[in-house]
Amino acid sequence: MWGGDWGWHYGLMGFGGLLFWGLIIAVIVFALRGHGCCHHHRDRPGEKTALDILKERYARGEIDDDEFKRRRKELE
Image (spheres, rainbow, N blue to C red):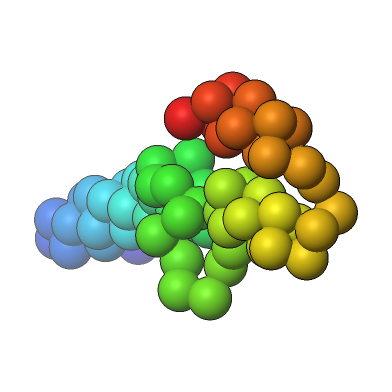
């Protein structure tokens, strides 16, 4: 009744364990990449940096020369 070769059962259990841990690691890597933990936001095309916004405000005349220089120094 319980006889036979059980080696293939252990092989399936080992494969299942590897699959489980592989999925856990893949989820962690995906979460870290998706939330910006491992790269800078300025690497994304089309996204403005704080300095870009500051330059636009200066160009529109919303801030004066002294404020622009002070804030630029803080950002850099």
